[in-house]
Length: 206
Image (cartoon, rainbow, N blue to C red; front, top):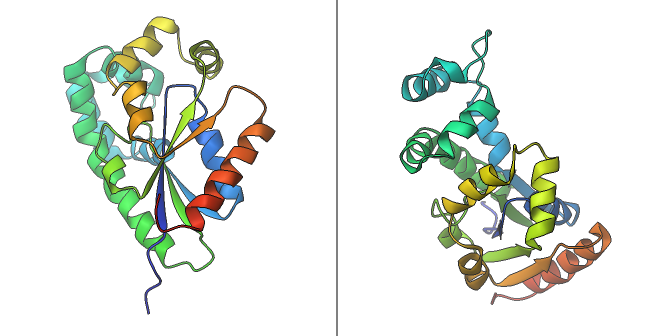
């Protein structure tokens, strides 16, 4: 007999806000996290996907071994709305299908308390509407940009170009049910996530 559907929790926030860190705190509480970035990176290593991307964006996105240079690809697709839409048309259907598969898989595991979607473009690709609960990760712009640069993004201009292709943070905050503040220590974040998750688990209303 199939188990009851787990609550689907979507994480929203700006670049460098710490969405994956918040998702990780949910994982510690018994959730399974679906990391869309990780899934996308796996597809970027597949021959058929590489061929499609080279056809769309040119041979200069692969190295001498024929592997996708993710940083080079990002420079191209995040600087142009048309090219961004093109890569989304190639990658997102694959990621979407895999996310659905994992949701179905995790729904069959009794020990899983809820399923968390760590999807960078959650609202932009329509996943927000599928979630039972949306959690927005609030973080000061200065801290977000510093984290993003430390994580390997080239410069502030490239970060802002990416943000210009996304739904505004105000809109993401407005559609969220809960807010987790991530300007301080992870211990403070962990406490907020525990509190939010307790509410989510103990009510049918969000």
